[in-house]
Image 1 (tube, rainbow, N blue to C red):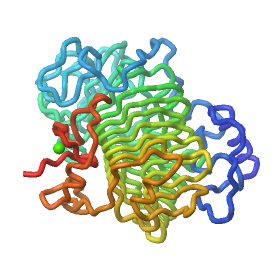
Image 2 (image 1 turned 30 degrees about the vertical axis):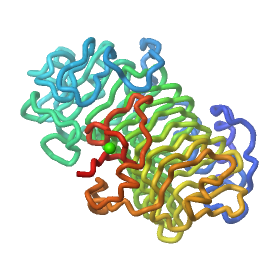
Image 3 (image 1 turned 135 degrees about the vertical axis):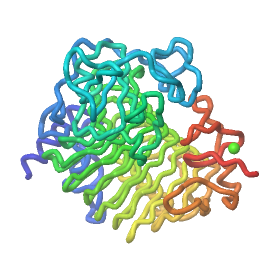
Length: 468
Ligand SMILES: [Ca+2]
């Protein structure tokens, strides 16, 4: 085990811009650091498969023929090949129909039940059977329409080959990309390796994954499973999916990013898995935009995390973040060189023994901005301030007095969700929450988790609620 830990540290140093050793020590009280002084927690290995730079995942290296990512926008706009969500009419120039359109006319088709993986197939009438085969057969740009069903495969996305799920298995004209639990529309990718979907080199923002249920598999041999693993500068749009971390024997993560990946993660439900250490999102080495998601740390027995930020400065807005129900739960856990912007989120972390809304794990982790979030049901503290006096901050005044973090407009009230499992706001929810958010339209966001319009003043959390 020692040898492998040493290897992992070397790899981490090579792959990250962080460099050098962590300045912190384990101190005996920091349950999050398990390598005895390493800069990387065990769960944070930047490479999933014992030394490979490309995860095994049952997949191959991304196709060399992909073009350079377009770069630029993190949110698709009218002229992109990725459709804007929720439109009833295709945007001019889209190569892909929007979710509410009639029968798709272009692209390739996949049907788990009636399809066959033959090179001449791929039409609506004679679809392919597997998603991986369709990706292999496609030329870019392209769109692959996937019918409801169960796809037991691990796949790797290609640049400008978008995947749309949620089509009724008997009717290509009937699509619901958010009915993940409805058998008629549930389009499930169940990993056959540790990772459900890999996204790597050269995959840019014109590549969309929309309308899938994804589940990571059984651990890779670093004891970690991932629903999605996004690395090496990939910047796909991940939207309208339900993504589950799977079943690592130690770690499981819904979505993990590494090595300058910059996906836009919008309107998804992202869950940790069943492992003792369970993470909804692990954001390493990224500037991702993370908006309008439910991020649920789940039921790790040891520790559960809504979002782990490591050597990264993501923008995290209007999410509802549940640190989970492990012994120790974290809403947002900031590891090394972490400087996220955190706005308009609802955060709770009621771990059975300890729970933190935001936790700084090292001296190089300081939230850059904490504006207009609501923290409640945080067992131990709203904010753990590394090296601060006190370290555990339990009220908003203390949070907004932090010297290393720009914080304002935060609240600590029970938002009164409709129920513990339905996190919509309702009439009895306090206006401090329903009208407590900041306008984020400059980020290209104008809707909520359900695709409903944001209305000024914005609500906190994933769902907009307009008081009647
Ligand atoms: Ca509003």
